[in-house]
Length: 189
Image (cartoon, rainbow, N blue to C red; front, side, top):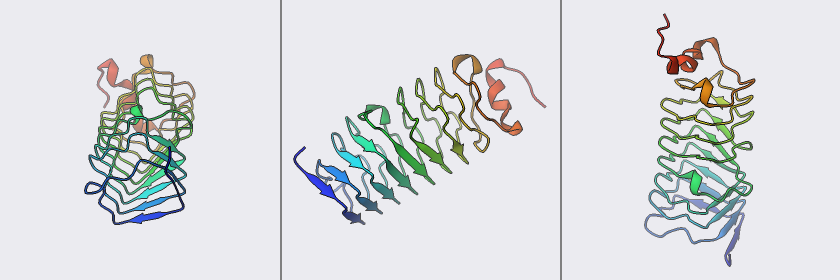
């Protein structure tokens, strides 16, 4: 990649009007920026942060996210499964990730905190020893997912089929037990 941008702050930029140039961005900060429906394919983000940004429906073909954080951001319908998996590491806090996909991704170095993940696809992903701290997981898909040691104690509205996931040593609160029994079609009062 010919463009290398380091330690730059982008603030209040609407990238739907002028797309972010394809480049390797390191230690860059994006504040109050709009990327919705833009093409971020083949861009590289290393130790970058996005705060109060909208990346909804952005294209992520072979995009590289290495130790990149999103705070108070809107990331609706993103196909993270299209990203480059090499050193893939994302951190989400106070963000909306509804309808996004992490299909077959290794998320062992990623964090989820106080975020909404409705209808998110985690099929065949690795979430070993991760925590969903105060996360909303209504309709999230867990199938053939590695959930060993994963902490769901402060998560809400998840439904996990115990027979279709690796779930050894995962942590749940007593309030969340119903989400583990949904597939058995039983009534809990």
